[in-house]
Amino acid sequence: MALYLLFESSSGYALFHAQGLDEIGQNTEAVRNSVSDLNRFGKVVQLTAFQPFESALDGLNQCNSVSEGLMTDELRSFLELNLPKVKEGKKSKFSLGVAEPKLGSHISETTKIPCQSGEFVLELLRGVRLHFDKFIKDLKSGDLEKSQLGLAHSYSRAKVKFNVNRVDNMVIQAIFLLDTLDKDINSFSMRVREWYSWHFPELVKIVNDNYLYARVAKLIEDKSKLSEEHVPALTEILGDEDRAKEIVEAGKASMGQDLTPVDLINVQLFAQRVMDLAEYRKNLYDYLVTKMNDIAPNLASLIGEVVGARLISHAGSLTNLAKCPSSTLQILGAEKALFRALKTRGNTPKYGLIFHSSFIGRASAKNKGRMARYLANKCSIASRIDCFAERGSTVFGEKLREQVEERLEFYDKGVAPRKNIDVMKSAIESTQSKDTEMEEVQPDEASAKKSKKKKSKTEDAPAAAATNGGDASEDAKSEKKKKKKEKRKMEQEEGETNGVNKDVAEQDGTAKKKKKKSKDGVATDETKQKKKKKTQE
Image 1 (tube, rainbow, N blue to C red):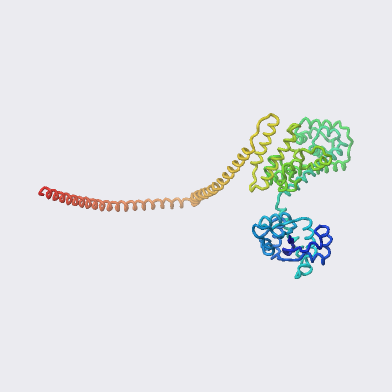
Image 2 (image 1 turned 90 degrees about the vertical axis):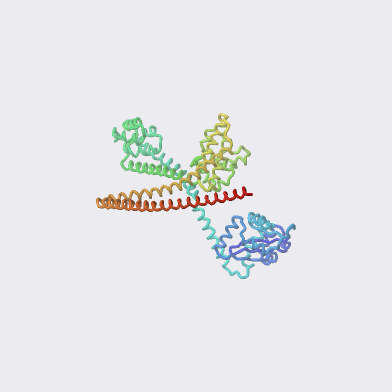
């Protein structure tokens, strides 16, 4: 069976015919050894046809389609022209070697050309790539490198632009920064506690929260200056007057050492820095919540914004998360434990990042694995809806959350949950009703705008009359009198015309009656004459 090789270069498509494979051998190792020798390899592989790309943009489009495993119209025409035709009902006497298996399957489906791809074909194509500039005679030295460089730049630039437009990158960066901020704020606040405890050790037991401790330390400064005047400010920070009074009393009988003003200034500056970081962390969390509601509203409403963002960042993107099956999503984040269990033949992990969800914490110990599997199933559905839906809405996420709640009640109390088909039907109906409402609102808004314009015009007319003053009112009165006179004249003329029309109509009526009478008289005379004839006979 003859073997043809399809090579996609940066300058165009090339088709090679592999003849005499017995000279180099059918094994991949034999081909690998013979690739470096051009004299030996050139006898086996020969150029059949070459079709250059029309432009750099055409080359980029062909490269994108090949990377996605799709056959373009240009490639199809090139193959159909240069490959031997296959008769219907008969097996082909050749096969096409392709580097990409997806491209080969698409070619065989559409054109019924048998394709193959393996190590043997890849080694032959490696030799073709190595000696490609020598197979094509008109190709100058350096042209191939320039075309490769230009195509690589345009291809990578297009990919980078595509990634910039995808907003889930912002979510990935935000959740990474949020995790690092949590660690930094925790370590910095512990440093503030340790540093200020040399001066006021009793404050640690009274104030447990790190952010509140930094605010209180910034407010107190020197413990010896604490008095009843600081109680309102401390209650505003802590929200408890008793704790504020306790701090004042502890400051009077504190066992801490005194600090110099320079040391106190440094402690205050560091406490201020911790407060700023904590406030920035709150703003970043709000930003993450808004972004998740825009990108993955169903996933956020189902499992929460933070856990959903962690799943997206661990998968790499929302599309990658949507491609993951529910079994993979269930143990996402527990890869080390999974491979350790596979290596030691132990129990595999039941959950990964999903464990941070509140549903698994609420489930009992024996039902945690079941709950994780069910929740992973619903998360995979929500991520696919968010990734591939045209319009973002939280309807499906809320319905999926209700299903998870019902499953929790089923595990705890035995209450039978609703079927998935019924829940999805209700979700689809609610989305359709929302869409119809949105469509109805748009024409209502347009009509409201028109009515507002009309109202504004009617309101502008009396306002303009009021601004003109008394002269304008007198002019309006005179105009009204003129209109009344004109109406009276018109009515009089109409009355006269109506009277004339009535007279004419009466005359016509009498004439018609006379004609009828005359006709009736003639008819009666004719009947009388007929009767007389009958009696005479």
